[in-house]
Image 1 (cartoon, rainbow, N blue to C red):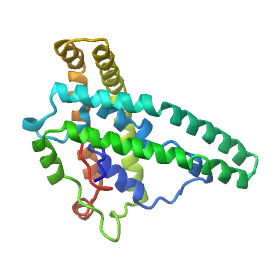
Image 2: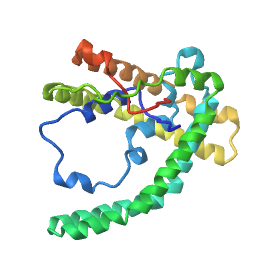
Image 3: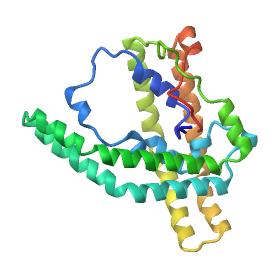
Image 4: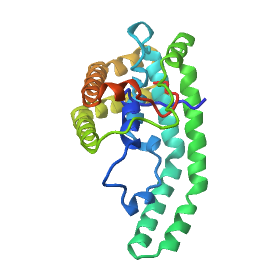
Length: 250
């Protein structure tokens, strides 16, 4: 089972990304090698324990679970830092070749990234499996029962260009609005991880994590508002047939 650790808006992001867009991707878009999971805001938030934000209050992540998730993300970040740096170097090399009109060279450069991406994919799958084990059986059961429905043969509902632009504007406004809180959450998670490495007690680690409680609550509230705003952009039929990109587990 492939587990996705993302914000509650992930399904709508997929919906927008899979819909038609008259502008289309630029030729250089294919030169990006860094996987989204390696540096996305969703991963940063989840490292602070918001990955389970969809859980109802009675099944909310405990402080101990949040600390465990943060530690797993930090370990993943450290273990994959070399591969991410290598991909950035290949991207720069490919873009330079593209600018020089050396198309065959571009393909050869990108091909060198394939084994690195394979390693990262395996590492991320391992991270997801480890985080899945942090959840209690009750939490896992709830998440499994509330995962987004799979897309049908026709894929997600098609959005108009106007809807795509509206949703992108809403998403950008959300990112801007929560940026400071996201930074605080990640800093707090990092501080808790380093404190644990230094031998801090569980109480001390919990005190550090609690410093971001207000920020987590604001981000969660902003997520809910964003989803409501996006729902208002969709037609009733689009809302009824909205689907996710696969199983999601918070």
